[in-house]
Image (cartoon, rainbow, N blue to C red; front, side, top):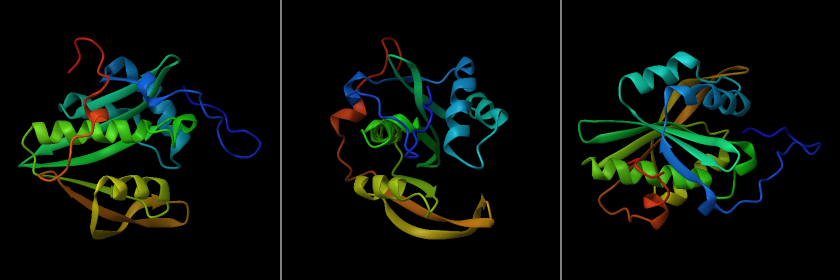
Length: 183
């Protein structure tokens, strides 16, 4: 459930603790709610077919729910001993309360459980909140992809990050909150 920005330009914060959030597998029926969050979060959002393709090919696709409904999602691909965080996003009203970190930790735990040795991701330099999240988790910048992202004034570079999973601790939040019967 995306919130409308207040006059200050910030979305109102939901009065929740991350413990009230639950994760589960993304379903086809979740795609419209995922698209709503995506569209409110990014000037150049992923399209409906991209999310449906991620489900179709078997990527790890998770959603985050609170008492009001779907409020975040994350997508991870895995292969050849590596994982790639393709997309992670939470509703603006939940940013800064640990919801994104909960999704990220769950993805990292899943990647390690699948035998992946490292996780990669790209992030816009213009997204300092995401950069801080990844760096505080232990990701290290290993490269730069010039002109990777579409941007209002042309193209924007992507910072490429890598996390070696061998020494990464498994925080309790990574193991928390799948719904009953959902791995």
